[in-house]
Length: 159
Image (cartoon, rainbow, N blue to C red; front, top):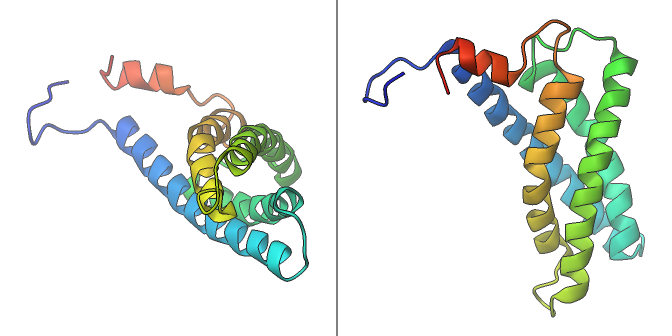
């Protein structure tokens, strides 16, 4: 494939890019849910920023699962609900561990006002984005028999 302007973009690459952009949009909604619940737990219910983060993550995962299943990975979600949801929880749980480590490290290490919970959440969410997308696209929403990205890339003429 050439890099010349106007060169056709292979269908597989377009589909991956569209799924990633949709995943990011769902993640944006999930971030808003996460931040709103976090702030509510901290300021209304008096939760600490670490316990509040665990609660806010739980609500955000529930909000993003169905949006990813129905929209970001539409057509790929052919597994049963509980099978896909259990895998999604596994992937998001691993992503959350990475996310929480970054969040906690920033919250503890940075001086005020730079350790604001929402600022720490922004940085942590950015770090976890690629981990969560890779897991969602390869372990949760991949149809049985569907080629992996490496196979799709070679069939698209990508290297």
